[in-house]
Image 1 (cartoon, rainbow, N blue to C red):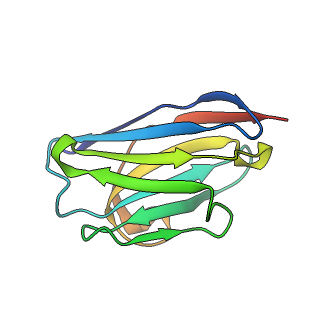
Image 2 (image 1 turned 30 degrees about the horizontal axis):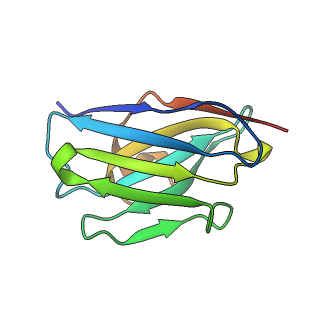
Length: 120
C-alpha cells in the first residue's frame, strides 16, 4: 500500500521561506508523477505544481518564480521549496502521487497535508 507523508509546514512571516517534504513509502516513486496541491480555509483544493517521472515540472501562475519543486528518487522524496511567501499562500499543502491533472480525482494517492501559515 502506498503511503504519503508531508512535513515541513509551519508559521513564517511574509517574505520568508519554507521547504516541504513528501515521503512516499510502499512503492518506489521512480515511475510516478507527483503533485503538490493546497487548500486555503473555505476554499477548494487547487494545484500548485507537478513533476513528471521524467522531471518535467509545471507550476501554477500564482507560485511561478517563487516555488521550486524537485524530486529525489533514491530517497523516495519530493520537495517544494517556497520562497518569498505571501499571506495568500496560507493553506494546507498536500502531496499527491500517481496521476496528472488539476483535480483531486486525477490522482491515486494523497497525504494528510501539512499546514503553512504566512503572517503579514
